[in-house]
Length: 215
Length: 208
Image (cartoon, rainbow over all chains, first blue to last red; front, side, top):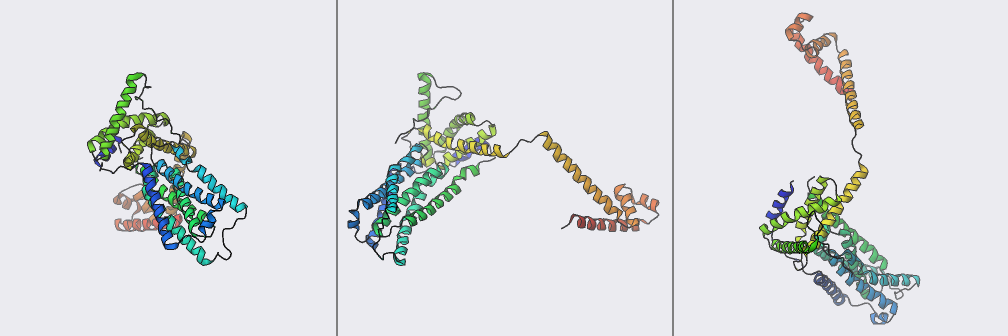
């Protein structure tokens, strides 16, 4: 196809579009959704037993705050990266919080820290833990996917990375709040799955413009 | 976070020098920004003007990295299609050039990567390839001819004679009848049977 023809075809197809709101506002909207989901879970589920007591443990408190902060920063990073005129250095925004969070998980593993009260690991506890995982990360992933779908043609990998990090961090925060089970492995496994979903869809939509081009 | 300095828009074919040209680029960028905003509101005419104005600019930018003119044109089209797909991400309160270049660099990079991958996998076609291809084609034709000759030799003598006179030497029925002393009707019948037999023989030979 001739470039001049393409231009005419595109111009003929210029339907009005709604401009995206500023990225910070969109990140805030998504984070409000995350907060709302956590709120609903609190209402339906109740917080984990002895949360206040656990919060006085600096390691637990640091980990919780670091994962929540990672979620916030990674969400901002994903929305910034999804725009063509923003620097790709935004990918580094969640790095400090992530470092603290991971260092904390590592320290806990190293110290053989177990957050379970004796006898807490039952099938029931584990399955309700997975339920929290799915209830939190699935809607958040899907909404984020819908909000960032235009980025598939631009920077699919950075956006996927930041987006799935945001979902992982929020999910992990939720699990720390609701379950006495230290489910880091489940969270990581689940969110790897999320990342694969994102990448797959990104690859699917990301090839769009290339496929449409005439040889 | 640190932000990269927004890329400078230059007049095509020149390095922007002096105040006047710099002003020109700024004015033009402002124009583009306004046109894009109107395009987002669904104004086809503004969109057409914008796309027509940015195309030469994109073409000259792509030509810096890509050497094949077809690659340049394909990349320009890729950029235009991506721009169209993500046109709602443009914020008219921000400069237009960095937004456009963000898209353009992405597509140019994709094309460059594909080009490098293809170059690594492909070798240019030389004279030798050509002669190799035609030799093997000629060899195949030779094999076919030989199989046909052998198949004809397997036919009964009357049928062989009919095929040779009517099909290979392309004589008329009357001539063939005079030469062989057979009637035209039996010549026709022999030819028909010969051809059917040949078809069977050759099909057997080529296998299922």
